[in-house]
Structure formats: structure tokens, C-alpha cells
Amino acid sequence: MSRNKEFDETKVLDKAMQLFWEQGYEKTSMSDLVEHMGIHRRSLYDTFGDKHTLFLKAMDRYESKVNASLTRGVKRSKTATEAPLQFIVGILICGETDSPSGCLMVNSAVELAVGDADVNKKSTEAFTTEEQLLKEIIFWGQRDGEFSSDYDAGELAEYLHNVGVGLRSMARTSIPREKLHRIANISMQLLEK
Image (cartoon, rainbow, N blue to C red; front, side, top):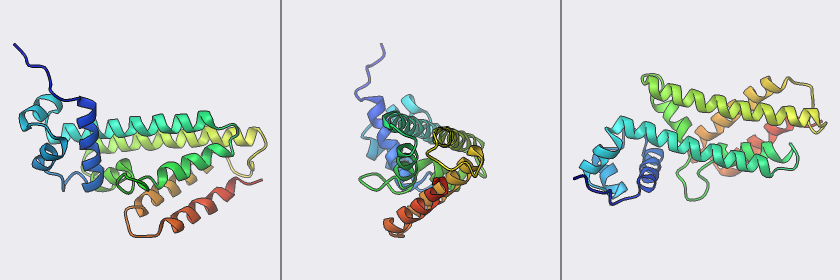
């Protein structure tokens, strides 16, 4: 007879996600995960598989949470002018409150994408999704006359996404948040009419 799980899978996956986000893949041991997640080693393996599989699931969980947050932010926006600022400042300097600094997707891409095809694929897909959302917002603003049409919406989305990835990387350092916000704000000036 199989035993019922004595833990909430989503909650313990969130704990693993937080630990990977904070420490990175290589610095996080199975012992760290067992302790931080608060479950037995056997339960971890039975539920999530090995460390790499758990890491990929943590990346999926992170991406799902970010996408839900971005979608809510865009839907709440009455104008395109509101939406990009929520997008750019909201996730590129993620980790400002009680979350680890930087962004799990960017951190993972920098740490592992060169040698890990699965991480490369997940990172690239996440970046493509974010860039597409930016393109849609920019096009919305250009169509409604809120944003300059001096640049192609797709090319501008590529540029702003690149700025976002750079800022998310810089957020892992001791660079002051004010500087990161200043860079984001200057980059957003490309949208002005």
C-alpha cells in the first residue's frame, strides 16, 4: 500500500526554487535541499527525481510564477505606457524585497546554459516569451500613439529585453538599486514620442 505524501509538493518545490535561486545549481547540494525543503531524502527522490530534474522543475515553477505576475500586470494596465514600466522594473530588478537577488532564469543561463542543453532550452524559451510580451506592449503603445514609432517594435523589444537581462545580472552584485532603476528609466526613454 502506498503512503500519502506528508507535504505539499508545490510548497516544497517553491523552497527548492528559492534555494537554487539564492545559491545557484552547483553550490546547492542534495543535503542543502533536504534540509531547506524539510522533507526526507527518499521523499525528495521519489517525488522530484534527481537534483537536475528537481532544478528543471524549479525553473518551470519560477517561469510559471513570473509569467502569471507579468500577465496580471499587463491586464491591470489601462495604457501601454503603464505596462512596460511594470514589466521592466518589476522583473529585471527582481529580488528587491524578500526574494534572492537577480532572476533565476538569468542566473541559471549564466551558470549552466553553455554546458546544459535543458537549461539552455528553458532559459531561451523564457527569454523569448518575455521578449514577445515586450513586443506586444510596444506595438500597443505605438498603435495608440503613446510610444514613438521611430523603431520597429520587435527590434526595440529585443533591445529592452537585453537591457533587462543585463540589469537582472547586475542585481546579483552590490551595485545600488538606484543605479539599476536609473538605467531602466533611461532605456524606457526610447519609447517616448
